[in-house]
Image (cartoon, rainbow, N blue to C red):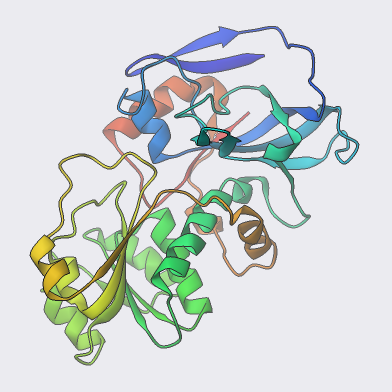
Length: 322
């Protein structure tokens, strides 16, 4: 088994180990695709835990060997981003080793068989969809409500699709014109660029003066609440979504929260909604094909991680091909 390990902050080192005996109720999976998320980059930079750790919190592959009768050799499977223990839920690639390896051994409880019709690249979006589901459940979004989305990120593109599915109205905010164009191409009718127009006035215009009912901030990339909370109506709800990598300098205008009696939630994971997310992919409620960047090769992982530190790609998913 060959792996890339964060050996020290800012460095991936190659490691080779012999395959151990396969435990009961477990399978050995040959990796085909893995996604690089914000938590993986934070681990690479040494921001979340001390090395060594194998990054990549979600992946898919083919069953190569199994001690569980419910799994067949050659089946396409997704590997869970989470490990549940007596001490709580661990995040792969952060709290325990992730999937940046050519082969991995996983207990059956962390393996999900993939239905036909979902591409290999789409599988690695399952956790993002599950996080979006958790966010919208907390926000309790309903028909005709307006939801403001901070940043054209993978997560917010998915939240926007789900909002439209639930017949709510997303408004996505970003300073990158090309990403706003992508949002429009994906069916988001209302967008705003703070560099080109006053955000409060724009939201007031788009909502006919009603302002927004909900706000979702992808805090891994755009943590500041700033003027966003002023765009919520009194009694509105805000969800700060992150993978545990939010910088300590992030802040929110507490006076605005108190004065408007806002409800604020933190969403870190998609735990509990992975099967729902898989179904949403299979039924094409959520489409992610436009969110896949150029496939990167497993052998090039060190260069890929360094490039993502220098040039993050919050609107496009970086996918490793094995």
